[in-house]
Every structure is written in structure tokens, then in C-alpha cells.
Image (cartoon, rainbow, N blue to C red; front, side):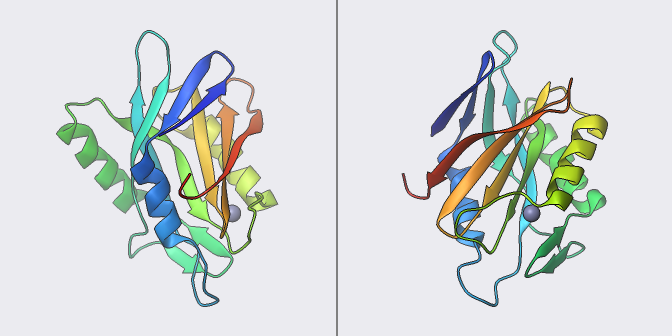
Length: 160
Ligand SMILES: [Zn+2]
């Protein structure tokens, strides 16, 4: 489990979330970008967050070496299912995707997409988490939904 302090909250990311990103990282030249939703719970009192679930690429998504486009419907259906199965305790908390670079940086397109999600996502959280899985390292960014500021909060190697 990784714990990240951001503003007044603690964001915890469970191992299985990092694991799925690690498994889908683009460590061979033919690998395409993958991605999906980050799903978890916001604790009522502290507003702390636990990321414990995810969606992964669905057949409707677009995947190429340098691009992943997530379609809404299939991922939303999965989210809905997970929400019901968890007795309505989990929700949408952000996005993950992979990059074919050792140490990942967000692209201008990523930044644009993330800002749009901060504005338009219908979720109970005040912030969204964005993970990019590079080949050696993954990065975690947090976006504040109030002012749309996005900052890097963590970079780490897999298996640590
Ligand atoms: Zn990207």
C-alpha cells in the first residue's frame, strides 16, 4: 500500500492497483497504451481516499502505441456494477493509463483530458487521481476539482 499526503488528506493506493498497471506497462515495442478508471472509497470524516479497484481496457476502447482513448459506456457499466457489489461504497476517483517511456510525463492531451474530467466528472470526491504507468516508474498526479490545479505527488518504481 502506498500512502500519499496531499493538502489535508491522505490518498492510499492498494497494491493490486499498481500491480495491474505494472502488468500492462509497455515494456515491449509492440505493446499498446492501456488504461481505465481508478475506483475506491472516500472516508466520510477525513475525506481520505483509498484506491482499491480499477477498470481495464474494454473492446470498445482505442489502443495504439501512443494513444489510449477510453469509451464511456462499457467502463461506466463496470463502475455501476462495482458500486452495487460494494453496497454503494466505491466510486469513480480518477484515471490510469500507460506510456511507452521509462519515466512517464503527461502529454498536453492528457492534461487537457484531465482538466475536462475535473470539471465534468459526476463523483462525490473533491479531487481526482491520475496515474501514468511508465516502463520503469509510475507517476501519480492529483487534480483539485475546485481550482483545476494538477500536481505531481508521487513517483516510484514498481515492486516497492
Ligand atoms: Zn498519456
